Length: 345
Image 1 (cartoon, helix red, strand yellow):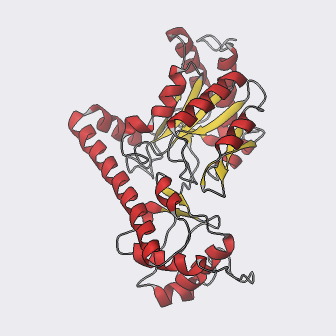
Image 2 (cartoon, helix red, strand yellow):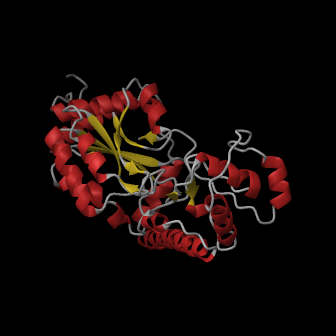
Image 3 (cartoon, rainbow, N blue to C red):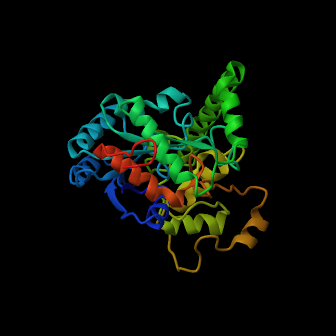
């Protein structure tokens, strides 16, 4: 499977544990903190035919960088030329733009363009069902007959693994989506959360300017969704943790959803202090270095900025370690050799 570099940290072990060879294509440009269009298109054009390519449908994790509509169109054209099986991961529908339809544009465009796609979709975040890990696995088929055969194969895979998926979270999601009043309220809540995230991005950039930062922070508002790749170095991150009790991943990613109107000023001040000059790093601090003392001494003002998934994704209730067999089914579908409904090939 060809994955964007970088991608969600668990994508790699999930696929490797499932017996897949994991390779990458360029996606993020560290110089611009944006999408590496040239690098991505060049690398995708070299992917062997009939390979699997992983695409983030919206609100890319961890970078927050999404291709623009015209860039998605170019990606679609190259993918079609290489005859690739497209695997979409959509974990943050609605959290990118605030509109679930707009956030599904890339997926729908690929389907309209005639791509064979599979879609792993999560409602953990946008429905607040994180502990339930509720989601859906979708395979786009050409006909009802093909859909019946795919469903038959999925049932054959799932039966010996878990028999049937937990129903509690799925029933909640079904109730929300099938009840007009609840669906309307949910859509308003999702937009409210997305708008709050966008507001926090704007306030962070504005506060950095007020601090007197000379760095270009445009990428903070150019990026989208829950996460922001700040462009800070591991040394700066370590300094931020040690001296200001601001916690984030070593690659400089922050969860914008974890920023509040009360903490954004402190966060901007801390970021400015560690980025206004090159940070010396003696290697003594890393990760959670200086945690207890720093938290105690600055607990009133400390901003803890984290975020991300913590448990394996489920595909129609199947744990992600069984992705190999499900993706194998996708490959056979791509070749037009899916078994008949009774399971025979």
